[in-house]
Image (cartoon, rainbow, N blue to C red):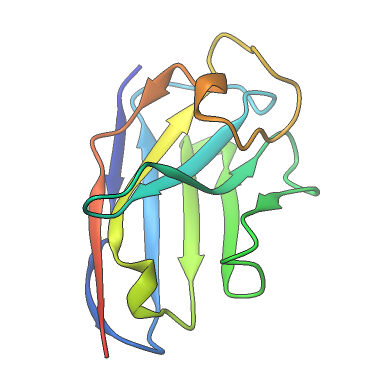
Length: 126
């Protein structure tokens, strides 16, 4: 499977962006999917994850209340609505899926995911 992340861009602080991750083929609703990001000079960090119906998504503390993860299983897509963006949100955002079903919950660990998209740049200026 291939994952294509899109929707990044340049936005002023306080603005919004919506990221989309599209899978090249069907990923089952019980496969965990997640968003991670990596800023220059920093390690990759967890942003948000979702599994199943999406009733219990998981968020990093830094994005809680500002970001919303969702998915459309029929369209093989996952989304990340980002509101109230801050300069510290600047990073390359990656989507990932656990096709091997290593986990049964929305994991915040990168090792839980076996397929990754190419990343989309998000730049927030003040």
